[in-house]
Image 1 (cartoon, rainbow, N blue to C red):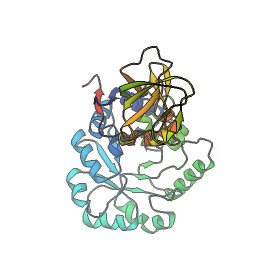
Image 2: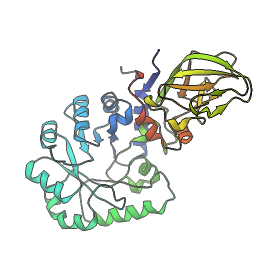
Image 3: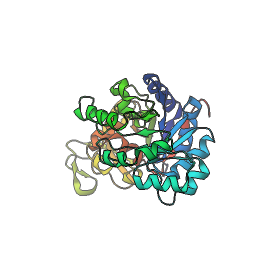
Image 4: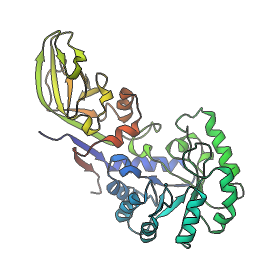
Length: 347
């Protein structure tokens, strides 16, 4: 069976970073956690470094190790999960900067790595990571005396510019950092697009780099082509796939392509998604199975050797809408069986 092909345009990622950077009044970093949203952290980070990115953000210290190896000793690498138990040696040896999330993490860091750089993550209302106002007030003097390299928080509703919680979080963040003279960060992709007042000293775009909403001006990054294994003719009244969830209403030509939910193409796409032959949409019919998807290609004059599920006619957010999810999940679910091809003029 010929493997499906995932093409990743590294130059498009760099162009998206540069476009977002031009919108910012301050430094623009890059979030490359979760293997750069499933697209290959080392290659993505190197290309972003070539484009001018000097600060990277990852979720875990282990992810930071990959980025350090990729970009060398110059750029800063911040770790969102902070200083976890067992991270000390990795943080020290690879010069990673933990964003401490609690008083306990702050104490752990100052005791185990007293001269090592760190940052602080504050909870401005999302109730996920970071110190709440009372905890921060109790340790602020200790933290500031140790010279944090960044104080940050994260917006919960930045993809909705009209949401009132954006302004509420901004006010909370301003209150919690009042009088603090060091670098601050509040905006990821959505925050960059809200307005310059959310930018502070450094922004941390993630999904916008990879072609996803809410960055509508993003250059598409990924193309996913699925090889056609077999075509068959079915008569009106015949069924296709597990559970008999699709019944032909006319004589139809059905193509079976080599990918499925084991490759991150969610079962929720069953009977809802489209694949494309050039600009022509072909509906998924029947259930997405582990390795196979069936597609109605009746209206094509010629069935091509492969059909696209991601590409110019249909980006990650259109596929996400069909699955009632978000582009983040589509990207980070892409499996390991694809034949990956990277495009870059610098390659």
